[in-house]
Each structure stands twice: as structure tokens, then as C-alpha cells.
Length: 158
Length: 298
Image (cartoon, rainbow over all chains, first blue to last red; front, side, top):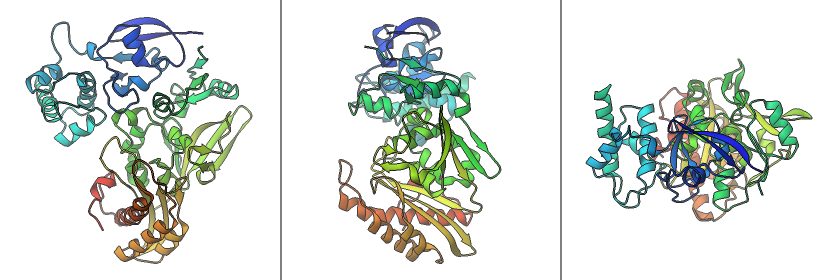
């Protein structure tokens, strides 16, 4: 038996019919075709699946899709404005915060949540804010520098 | 085959679902994560508790705190009264998992999961937490210490929901939770310790000590507590209480540490927790979380 739900993802509403155990990640990728969020570990260790729900970071691989019913979900696809990259995305490119790219969507989402809560984070605070996200290739130096740089740019824009 | 799912906003509806055998889920950071890890199968019928407003939030009642069951770790660690007067809870809640875990994970969930390594359980036991349980047939208030019956096991009935956790006021107490950790974030206690003390001048008048990941359940250590009372809580007294706590510990060997290592480290973390609690009882500042700031102390 399915349960009907409405997912508000990146400003668009989707009606879906779901079984109780479906994870939000499987629905985003499998039903809605939003494949930016990745499945890494599939048990909340690596953060590649990170999305925002009502502005807060959530590991979507281990979150029941039905619990997101009616709530605002933001995936990496929702960060850019049209063809204009989000300042965090630009900073990741400028500072070499991307290598294979698999962790990048989750990193960007966690960084978005961090900068919203703390617009002027120290390096330690950035590392703590990204502690639920693993990168297995480029390492964290470029990523941390990118977040710091985006914070500066976003502060100028305000 | 799909099961039933509801996400009520009224507590009465959640109690009805629980009575019909639907398993409660709040943040899902144990239940759903454990399912993804293959530890168990997701229960067929679920009732989500996260939309029930009366289960979430922290109230100062005049003689203590009443913490709603689905209050998140992030809410606990940011709450001014908890940081000031139930500081060990802030120490513990602020080091659970990652920012996402702390946003989703709840205090009631941490209690119900009954992990021997649960970060918040030691502080709750030392603050004499009372757990309010409710079902369609009534409610009861049970001291937390009577609730844990083994690793992952509690005496909560299948139709009961945790409604709130109550903490009596403990005027003048200094408290501290520390854990031995291999990394700062996304970690689970290798071993942990909580100390809550009240001083009379320079003398420890009251002491409560709990050990984490050192027994089948998080537990208090009366022998260490009584040894600390009447002392100055200084290095020698803290070390003696740590030694007694290590003696009482009955840890296991697992992927994170061996039994012998855990027993050896029990003495160290208990000593550090006492040092932190004494300092706070004297009005000195020990950063939250204490785990990081007490490295290299004693």
C-alpha cells in the first residue's frame, strides 16, 4: 500500500506515492531524477547524500521520504540561480575543492547550512560544520579554503 | 509489501498508533541508519513523532527541567540553562555524530536506543533523570536508572512512548562529560565518564559518577562516588575515584577497543570528568564540549 505525499524540492512541488520504508535519497534520485545527491555509504557516515530539509542538513540516505512530506527540501541542484553558480560552487572551483566530485554535492549542502547558521566561521568551525562529509581524494584543504572564501564573498554581497 | 505510516500532529494519535503496534520513529538516526547498516529490518508499521509539537522543547519548571522526548541534540547543546546548570548534558549532546545527526537525533531516541555508549545517558543518570512514559492506558514516571535493562534493551513497553525527560534542579552543581575519542567528530565514545559534584567550600559534599561504554548499560559507580565525597576533589582524590570506577567497569572488546584498554582508560576519563566538574563547581570555565579541552589534563 502506497502513501501519497508532496515533496517540495528546490521550489517545485512533486506528488509522489511511496511505500513507508522508502528513503528520501532513493525518491530524489529514482522518482524525481535529481541525481546530484549521491549514495556513498548508505548509512549516514559519509554525507554524499546530504540535503537540506527546512534549511537543516539531513543525510537523505537514512531519512524516510514520508517524513519530508510537505517540507522544503533543497538539493545541490537548487543552489545555482539559473546558469549562475552559487558563490560556494564558484569558490569550490576556484580553490580546487573538487577532484572526483562525488562528495561535492554533500559538501556544498553542508557548507550552505553552515554559512546560514554562522556567516563568518573560523577554520575550526568550518571543519566541524563539514564533519559529516567525507572526501576520499582531494582532501579538505581546498574545500575549507573554498568555504572561507565564499563566506567573505557572501558577506560583501550583503 | 508496504506497511502503514503516519506522522500525526496530535500525541493521542501517536499513542493510538503505538497501541496498534506501530514503531515510533523520530529523527531516524538509530532506527533508519541501523536499517541501512543491515543491523535489523525496518519495522513494517511506523509512526513518526517529529510533527508533535508538545513532544519538542525544553521547559524550566521551577524545580528543574522538562525536556520533550523529540528535543534534538542541537537544541540541548544550545540551551542556556542546560549549558549553565546541566552542563554535562551540553558536553554530551554537542559531540553526538555530525551536525546532521545533532539536528535530527533526539534525546528520547537516545534513551530508547539504550546504547551502552550513548553520550547523553551518563549525564542523565547523574542528574537523576525521570522518564515520563505514556500509552493509551495510562502514564508512568520511571527513574532512568530503572529503565535500562541491557545493551539496546529497556523496560519500555511496546505500546509506550517516551513523552519527556525530567531533571530535578541540583543547585550549585558542577558537571562534566568526557569521552575518549579517536576523532573529534562522527565518533562514538570509546569510553566515557560523567561527574556531577556539589562542593561545600573546598570539600566535595556530593558526587555522582557514571561510566559509558564500560558496562552492558551506562551505569553509576557508587564506590567511586562515596570515595570522592569528603575529599578536596584534587588530583589524588580524582585518581582514586577513577581507579575505583575502572575496577567496577565490565567492558567488552570490540572493533573500537579491547577490554583491557577500556579498563585502563576508564580511570583516566573518570579522573578528567571529575577534574572538569570540580572546576565548573568552583565557577571556573571549562569549554563545552569538555572532551576536547580536557585532553592532557591529569
